[in-house]
Image 1 (cartoon, rainbow, N blue to C red):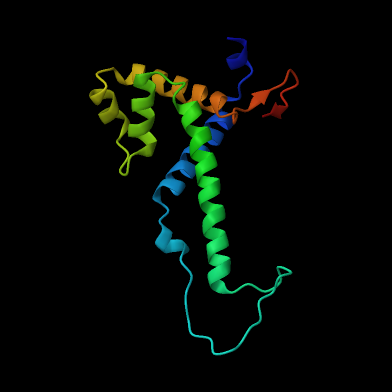
Image 2 (image 1 turned 90 degrees about the horizontal axis):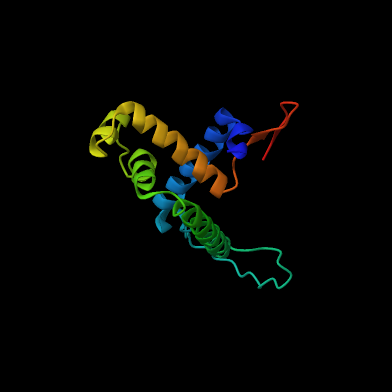
Length: 148
């Protein structure tokens, strides 16, 4: 594959692992963390229609909605790329990165009934395929210059 020949392996692996960490972050984020702190304020504030002053509750609600919209877009994009992987590759990625307590590599190899060498080959292929599908792969030009 010509695409894989120009792939910068280390930079691509860092990029896809950032995406997988982002997945875990969105997965573990709970609404309680985004709730506003409500303290009584005994002052009268007129509503601002110019978008100037917002209360903590309004700001928190806006941040909450923006967070969930970002998460929804991220999950939709991630899932499109994730389902381009084979079943064994998906299992490997889930066990390695997406479970609440990720498994150790040799445990995953035993679970999938493959040798450790085959495990690492499948894992590398899965990460590169996912990086390409999510468009986070980093390529080298003929001059050694990196580009996404």
